[in-house]
Amino acid sequence: MSKLFELRGKLPRPTYLLIEIIGLIVLLLLWQLIASMSTKVEQEVPSEQFKPYFQTTTDTEFDSPYVFLYDKATINGDELDPLFRDLATEGKPLLLFTQQADRQTIQSKASQYPDLQLIAVQTTVQGAEKTDLLNKIGDFSGSSIITEDFFEEGEEVDLGVNFTGQVDAASITDGGLSLGIDKDLISNSILPSPVEVVTSFKELFQKDRLVENTLFSLILNLSGYLIALIIAIPLGFLIGLFPFFRALFSRNVDALRFVPLTAVTGLFMAWFGISITMKVAFLAFGIFVYLLPVVVQRIDEVEKVYVQTAYTLGASSWQQIVTVFIPAVISRISDDIRVLVAISWTYIIVAEMVNASEGGIGALAYKSARQSQIDKVFAILLVIILIGFIQDKVFKLLDRLFFPHKYQVK
Image (cartoon, rainbow, N blue to C red):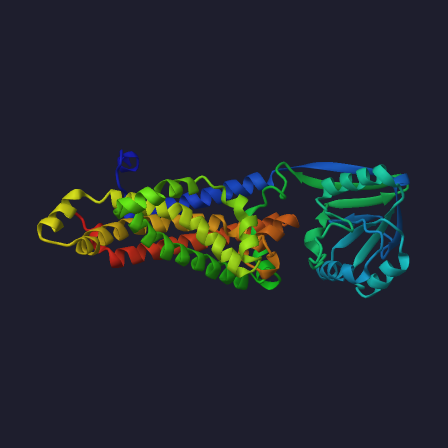
């Protein structure tokens, strides 16, 4: 027991792994506990503010209905198809708020899905009062308010279950509409539970092409990393080894570290367009800015005794570079390269937000966040963490393979 709290002590490998697993389980349980804490609340809407105009059931009480706020001037039946289909499959009632009572369109679509329990509601108030009503119901149920300008121009419309908010109970009476919900103390739009995050992977694989998007981002990331290495290492050696180049570039290189990379996205779009070339160049620049000063620093850290020994043995300048500086610097910079992997993933979302239709896990995270699919965002973040972890282990394995002297026990 004393070894567990010994200063700078080391635990046996099996014990260390066991404690790691216990720690992970405790964190997941704590996450689940916090995400599941809730309290019962109700939302009342007076009858003069709405009018139910179509329903496929005679019951006035509904268990766990979905609430969807569709506030477009014209009802698009084809647009509602994915939503009706998904909810008919789930067997859940739908409380559909619309701006106008288009009975024919709604009833025509509902007839295609006989398993759908639909209650269509027209908001009878207008102007600011209607906006307040929709906001109140939207905030309560977690529903998005779908308007004409909800989607960006050119973005595909796919109204599914993820655009709706679910309540635990709803009832329609002469007095009005009553909604009840087990309100999370911390909304799942802020902190989804681990179960919700794991469940979201199914749709990520089936609908959002998670594997293809991940491979796209991985190739993009590695391409930017490779270009940065090809440029930064030779340039770093020039600046670090020769006084002329150090005087010429050193301060300029140091100044680059203070450039806010997210602010230069527009420049890269102007230079390279909005294609993959721009994204690779942006990622390469982001890594290059951090890597170049590190290379110069590692050259400065090479102990003079090794250089003097090589010089004493008659080595020329080129031989000193090849036999002393390159091995010493590369063996040290391999650790820096491994650490900088995290930085490259930091900017992947920034790069892929440009022309997001090209795909990528960063673009997928951005779209999911914009559509309030926070469980998917957490799932994507877990995928990025897993990729980063695997990359780190691969780099460490290669480091042991190419520089075994660093791991020799003295």
